[in-house]
Length: 190
Image (cartoon, rainbow, N blue to C red; front, side):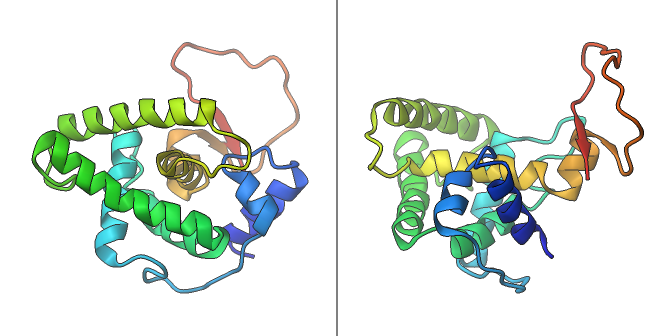
């Protein structure tokens, strides 16, 4: 079983409580073993990696780019999204570059880290407003989908679960009174 299949099955078990699971629950995922981009071209995967890195930048732990969230998004959009959601995602990618050029005079890839962060923060504010007022039958905002896939791809990756979270490969007995020190990372178990 690969990671995509495991995530899909876990979302069924948890009743759709993981990020972005409503798409998995409604439509399911098909496995695709290719390692090269399956839905996007390499330029788009690189752009998605940079968007992910702006959302989850490298600090004392690896960032989203090192976890290859662009490749993860490529597979998830191809295998798990409906044609409608794929179209929204593709239009969103075009919008990001167009809107970034309008705001900064440069493409997203040519913008500085500060310009990227400012642009995506503004875009995030717009998507939150949209999501708060949208009707149930209306599609999600494209940037919401990108953020969800970034988080899902990062925290289910080996890098995210072992270097950003505390990780115990084989957990011991239950201990409900673990001391917490400010700044401790959350736990992840496989």
